[in-house]
Image 1: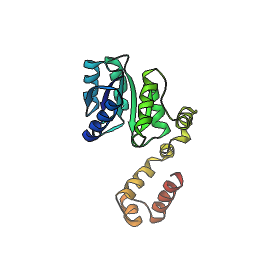
Image 2: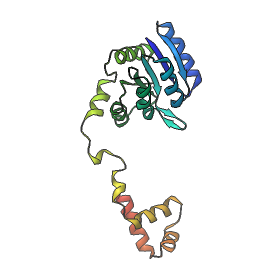
Image 3: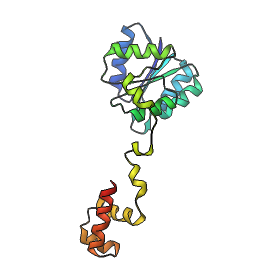
Image 4: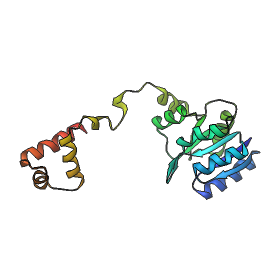
Length: 190
């Protein structure tokens, strides 16, 4: 299998390259960020791109479509230190053929790459089941924030800035009891 490996940790890229080469795969290119991965995919047309999820200035998921745009047959497997069902669902929606944790042994990684190369979906079944279940607004941890009034947002800014209740009341031009009510409403919604 011809591989492209993209991660912002050069030592990890080197280690993965050595380990996968030792298992009979050919690492045709490596990249340290998604833009480099897109260019490498264009140039080398790998079978599979192993793509990190988190980069200092980017998100690996945002590169999936661009990689497919320059190398339509390249399968993308996301590599991440943490796995959440919402992120897995987003990766699949963007066209990823797999999602694997950085803590998995090399055998599991190799198996995931092979499944993806064959057109399968290489994701832990429990994570996949949760990722594909229907979602409601209540599943979003920030769901309650859309119910804040403008005044509650102003009060929240005061809290974030570390103002006391007295200072918040002064800043908002309200009584101390009203400032306490705003803070209580914020806590109740959170």
